[in-house]
Length: 102
Image (cartoon, rainbow, N blue to C red; front, side):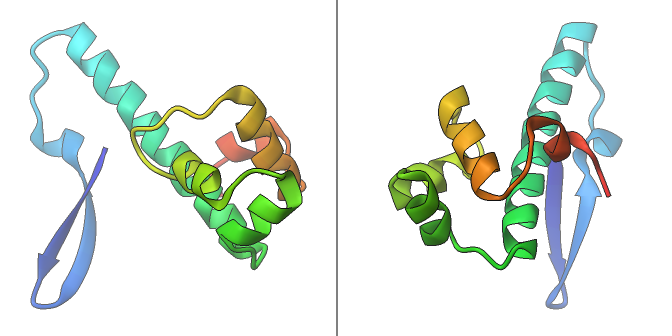
């Protein structure tokens, strides 16, 4: 999971894992799942912005509400597979494309 540090009005991103000592493999595994979820959401938002689309644009194209689109992009929520696929198709993406880091 990433953290954001603010110092003198500047933002910097750091990897929390650099500061955490895991007690066991299960704890490390759960951390990695959370980190992957965070990265996935970041990639979704990044790709939407790259396509110059708003959440409203995605909603209009998919038939989802703007609130549903917002929930897809919100950390801690678990969208249905159907809604995630609709979101991706609205961006002309397939499921594999969101896992590729550029």
